[in-house]
Figure 1 (cartoon, one colour):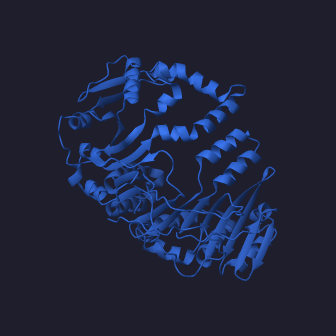
Figure 2: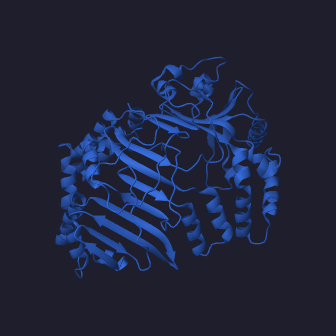
Figure 3: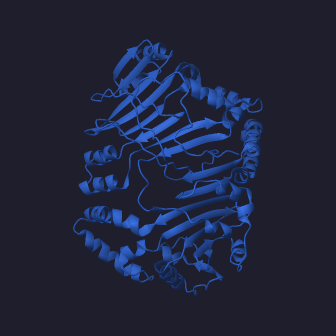
Length: 490
């Protein structure tokens, strides 16, 4: 799976992430194998652009812009850390009163030089030593920590940059901050343990998010909607959403947290208060009825730079859309029709917001909202097949696993072309003339080499990765082929 710098979509892979019961880590950020990461960076799209001779003047200009001997020493130190460190990790282990418990660990040949700087009064790393006063040094490692932090080894998971988090740890931190227990209960209810691994790849950047289970409220995507999308779409995202199931699972925690924030109201009082304004726009049964408006496959796509949203129709959503159209003093469109709707700024209760226009249409299965009236009129033509299935994006989505709850594809090259005029405008500023050539070259190179990127979210099968504490990272490059899930390339 390849994601370019715009990171328009983050791929989701649902797998098992199982922290140990006594794990004190709330959030961890680790670079487990910097030797392998440096090699992958050099071979990646980003590394090739950064190393291009035409871009070199940019880095030279930035280096010379650093003022003073101390600044140059800091650059040299950072360079030695990058080249002489085999693994690097940071942990936030929650709060000790109003002070965070932090751990920073570095392994590699640069450790002695780092330790010397930490112990030098007034040295480059003196502020770091003051913030993390507990220092444990060895021939090939330096570990800094705040007082009271646990000696917990860094995680070894595949990836160049790995972030993992603990739902229970985040909830406990909310309690320690003095927030109402209902807020912590809501966090524990909504959050899940997980990790995000980023790995440099020749085409850009691979991302894999791992969660222990399929989040409540996701459904398998109905791919029939793809036939209605324009063949020229540059980006498409589909998600199967079960609004009633999500609301049912989290209703009690959400209402309790809101009631606690309000002070005196009970959870059901909060639900009752929302019923009146929702009824004014056609939503029956208050918040419970609002949850019913979102059910099925929802779609967002970008065509010729203009976004369009498609919401799967149901009786609750039909009533909501008709109520909103009436607020805008418009008749709702019939299936196959579309209307330009001028949304008055007064609806936002902000006098300084000007009216804005939106095209609203519907067909037999969906409500469509867009700022592209031409594209929507073509799309709603009765019985018209858009040809998306035979497009490059359509063929890419056809290769994704059945049962996926999230699907997306990005024609990155076409989207990134919008950077070209902005880069030219930047280069035309006289004060930045010495940056013009390198910046333009980097942008043109990025656009020319960007490809097609795919986003998939689906349950995995087979053996699942787990969080394994392990201290210094292994010298061998971590595998990036697990979990057992298809990878899509250009």
